[in-house]
Length: 222
Image (tube, rainbow, N blue to C red):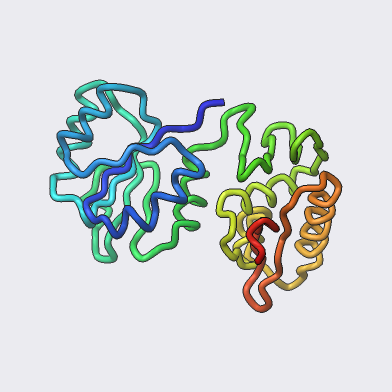
């Protein structure tokens, strides 16, 4: 299934370099810096979301959004704002984040704005998650997951190699940051690890003591 397509308008190379790799793991991404180039991209093909780094852009964002609507190329809008930017002075958008934030935080927020399409597959180095059917696949093998296990696997596949805290996992999978009883998370981590073993996948969920967990490939081990 085709991925969602994002137009990322950003004026600072450092911001682009920080965010683009994570975005490209989940979406088809086109990056541009100018208003004219952004409008050209919108005119040439369907864009599901326009991601505007307002802090770095050198054109009038409100004018750009007005032109986008007038040209019948209206797409969803997501704003990346500075700390002091007033929302009432910005165009209406489906969501926003204020700098500073991590690539993982942005992906988590975008996932709410751009839900997975039916039949979509999350994939990293051949380890695949069939999101709709809750199947974890490697090579010619597959194992069924519960909905919560699948949601947990999806979080790790979204940012492979990055440490994800226990609080973040509770927020994204269970919708809470309550850590009074962590047995539920521990059990689901255990079963997800067991599922990776069942399909002989060369990946492990490493525990980073005091920090959280991360999905890594055994092929990267020295």
